[in-house]
Length: 447
Ligand SMILES: Cc1ncc(COP(=O)(O)O)c(C=O)c1O
Image (cartoon, rainbow, N blue to C red):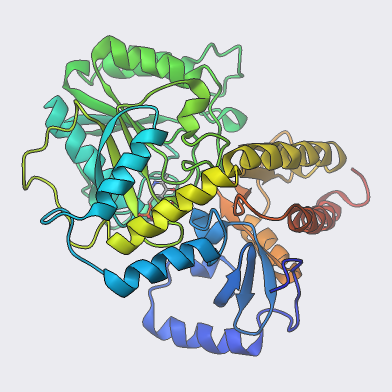
């Protein structure tokens, strides 16, 4: 397939797509789709997605963060095929197999700490395991999470997920013992303060107003957080935030539970996003990219913390041997092709261009990110920061051949880490033309 997509052969949504959207709507819950454009994926190759009408698009969301080395990467397909011929399934939590052990050993060479592992299928499952392990080990029942985080949609994790009320509406009561405090979202500071003059009040608030007023710190099991808030639009906390939070955690003996499901596995230019700050968490969860395209997630727990007795936590299909083989192939590609370094390089390149665009187009309110986890906030007014209709923006991009999704108040760019440079440039060109178009709508021919 031509990696120089996009190529729109039938103006999307084409007739095949519309037919499948109709069939789909009779069978599936609406999920997130009414908010987006009606693309129906037929497959693709690398960083190019093909739809059922034969249109080709640039993949700027990696199939929601999973395809870090592209669609159907040949080395991953080979690993999957070879494994599947001989070994499809046998539960690793009730029996044993080499593939899970090999993956754990491999991860222990990569992770900044020595861990014991629980493998599952989706991010939310790894997070549920992390919460159970933290409770069991600390013998404490309370957690502190962050408003504007996303950790999943099962009962434990949705008690922390808080990027939109729809995630909870109609589902209360949720897991007790969860206290949420504001995430350090400097562009829209919840305390209406300005960094760095704020002196990181967001951490002091936890100490002075939460732990000293109503949450006994000795009953808190862990801080549960995203190192960069993904669904909320790649909100990168100021560099002092996590070191200060770590200090607070140490003061009270609270665990650090780091959800790297979206930004881990090299996307930000380090294997773990928290490594940028030299912070070693007690528990890390991985998902999305770690399976190379197959369902796999990981709860990596510092060896001395993992104290679950036999039978306390298991899975039947999690950590499937084929997924483990795909994951090992993914890790080989990540390191042999130096994709973590590439994520940083291409990310810096893209962020620089976007920052220059910000000087040119008044509609750009904020450009931020780390590596290939990038978000742009488009606003009607830089003072009020009222966002434009980001779903409409993504639809415009789709019609021109780029698949993007929203994130919080912005739109996100998180392509495969091995996206060819010319394809990235083509996407950036399409992005600029769309920004210019929307800018004209709001600001006429002015800036
Ligand atoms: C940070 C984070 N944690 C957990 C999840 C949940 O993962 P899954 O949808 O695989 O359950 C997501 C999904 O977007 C995520 O971004």
